Image 1 (cartoon, rainbow, N blue to C red):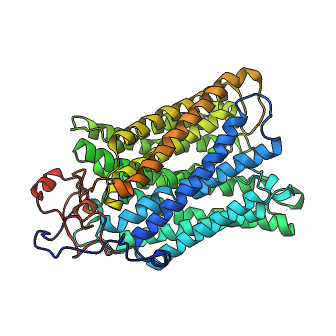
Image 2 (image 1 turned 60 degrees about the vertical axis):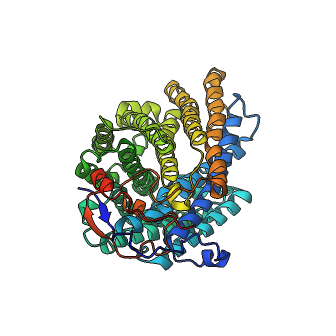
Image 3 (image 1 turned 45 degrees about the vertical axis):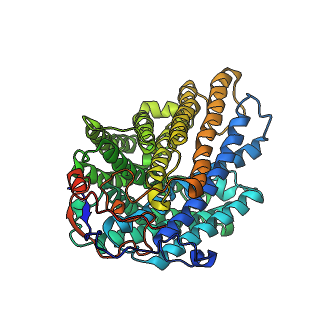
Length: 553
């Protein structure tokens, strides 16, 4: 049903001496590396940088919304700020966060490989990401974009005072980075599994990345083509979306959301894989219904391509189409519900401990469940007509993406940080950060459900005075949330030098990655492992006590 690999007896093996973090190698070796672990760390640094830029844009938005009039930012500037926030957070943090960092680091180790299938393409994907991010920062610095992160036509094709072409090119390049990552994962999982590593011995973390990779490879080209068409219509005047030239203004919406709704699952599926690993480890139980959880990831990927038009219920699609897409929207919630119920069943009668990764996982369960249930509201035609383009949409999206994916990302970083760096972090401070993040998030975004229900539209710098109290609560919560996000960066950085030595398996977890030294060897394994056991097999783990690989400094 799952994976765990039996390694050669390490008590008699030659002790490894060189890890991927060896300090003898300089900056050039990092910038030209083919090692998936180093590339993952390069991604982690880069993505953190963009996260805090996007967070700074969010802080400006919440400061503006403290008072009803537009008194901090001019209306055009406000448009550029929320567009910058959306573009950076979606394309430069949420989409690559877990796959490019934790997934890049762990997938070869979890399947028993020495690296990804295409190491040079893996490095190229990071350089494309950096090139795209640099271009986007230049765009935002020299004029900005004010169409919203969705590049909605006709704003993006006809309005002249905005840098749509450059911003579209940045997203286009970032899309190729995503495609290369997904391609690498698919080939590695198919072709480079260790002997005995069958599909139903794969960790659920690998299953979730496999499903997300399919979405990356099949969905991202649609976005790339759409952006090319926008640029061509804007620059040479072809009539793809302009009805005066024979185009269809709804075609852009269909093309954009055909990618962008599956993109939600590109973001959340890898996070779900993290939660499976964390919950199993800290409840000391096999994941309940392994096969159902594995196939639910594939089902989410498949259904994700058939629900895009629920973003278009008020845009002129037929009532019949709206009815069909409403039904499909309800159905796509079923695989996610399977995961939630099976994780809950895994916790039942488990030996639960509340280490920091588990606190973040519990935060994920609560916030993602609220986000998912409110998605059912938006899939209901009557409710959607009332709630679309209000702050209810903002709250729902952030509960799923930020409350869900970001909590999972932080759970994964804390869970595998000892493996990545060989160091532990201060447990008491990290637990406090997890609690602060959860409280700050709820205080920030839950009032926005009420604001949206009462009719406050999104993307406006000014609003009626009766909405001020809830907006003040939301802005105060954003301050608390910012503290929760800043703390991990501080104490994780501190731990690199002063943290306690972690050892190979500080959590007593069963995954193959925990049976090798921390930090791992450059080539991951001294010998190719042979898989003979399930994942999440704690009886097998007990039988191997005393044979772990010693940590090498």
